[in-house]
Length: 114
Length: 117
Image (cartoon, rainbow over all chains, first blue to last red; front, side):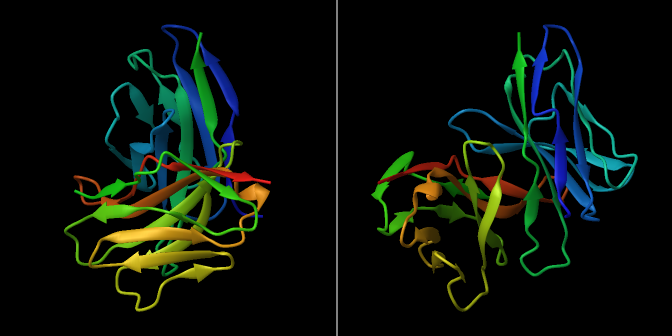
């Protein structure tokens, strides 16, 4: 079955460490996104990519970095510059081929700073 | 810029009854799309229903229907015959655009629905 796989499901980071969250999709979607979710908040866009080797900052990109070397993969690195990284991170992909070109989401990674 | 407002932080409903979750939106775009997602405690976002701004009829998907009132800029989700498994967070979202002109989803803060037996 096609879908988005995020790993790991839970991640613990020490102060000053960089960590990388994985996102892989086999839907052949061109666009991929990273969202951050805090308790009681909706999702906020961190980074997005419309095509391979190209990505753009979203609304809250500071302290994060991404790469898009393959169509299927869009990893997110949470750097030590991100002052409050504890949150739930969701990866999504989309296509414009369907009229309602919906977004497909992964199951998320819960990052905790210890 | 696009904005989604969900004014109900929490809602309760009895099993087998219907419930309406409110969503209002703001946009200056003549063409837009509205989505509803369900987020169970496990965390994944499950697509429920979509309404295009030019659709003449309200969208329906099984027990889900969208009460779209364009003039009032509202897109309320109606869940009929609630089930215990409907207990979850529900997010209204709109197709918006980044400063660079690329597409993104703009989300409301969500409504936590609890279905009581």
